[in-house]
Length: 459
View 1 (cartoon, rainbow, N blue to C red):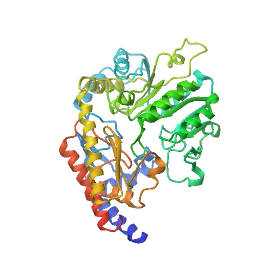
View 2: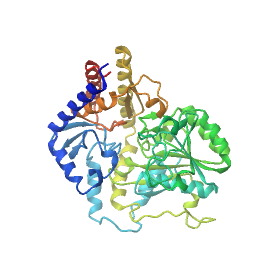
View 3: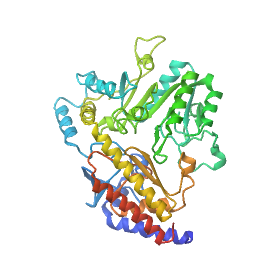
View 4: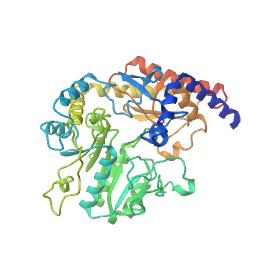
């Protein structure tokens, strides 16, 4: 194994090669920094050594400001399930634009969009729209607290549910020490940002993901617990799926204690199956948060659930409805784009078998290669969601991920970008436009990056 200084020098070589091939992206980002904090609209766009500046996207490829072409497995952080700039969505947006971009009122296309949710998702009898996944998860918690009259919310360590104060805890950004995180059986609530309202995050308890101790902790807080929110596949933690038996027990315990079971389907909704994770796992939550795919590439969020669970969103309900409002909720342009996407997915359910098979192929081939060549690596995910970690596994939660071989992950990410792969830092996605040769290229880039780092003594 080479020493730390030599590894740093090697990674700097990769960074210099990326700078050399993308000087326009670097210059644009540096210009952004003069007027935008960090030069980005979202911190998750930051990348090593600098963010990619995209010039255009089409099908399964994107081109940066220097006209470098990349094979796209980011897909707008999972959004573009039909591929980039799908014709059916472009046509729907153009048609909607001719009638105006915003009304601030009801419009005649809302029913069709909402009906698609109710028809496609097993646990949705009523749905309401907002503008982001963060808003959607916030409203699910408000609904759970109002319905139960209890103050506490539980989330799982490693789960990312947006940036509002109640849930911006313990999702795994670098920083907390092992002591601060608490025991794996009883994770501590660790705020992920300065400025969070202490009264908000201290009302959030943190559970261990895929660990039976979660159920004991739920029972300890049962009389004060309004709801439990979970990503059926933890995205930002590294594409870690929940075990189905774990989800089944969670469903049983939340019913037993009277707490809402909330699925965060911002990523998994309409991705794992037409009915999302609740169809894929055959487990029905009380309410779910949606986003990403159902917006057709535009800002979008939604809250859907059983009619009983959604009761306090009815204005005339007793003892009164929760506050749910937004100038742009159910925008006619977003509704048009989202309807086009969901109609295609409903009409062609075979797309899911194909996308999920591509995800299985990646995981199977990478894990076989790692085992045969003795790499400490493991591919994870479910369906068309995938990732590869720099450790042997098993990988059941964020604490396992933290045991990854140091320096390998940053090296891999630099090599992915250097070799024409556009992919997020901890989870990738297949889309309807990907072909078998694209998956072959994806696998080959991964294998070549692993071999390169081994040859350099990093791995």
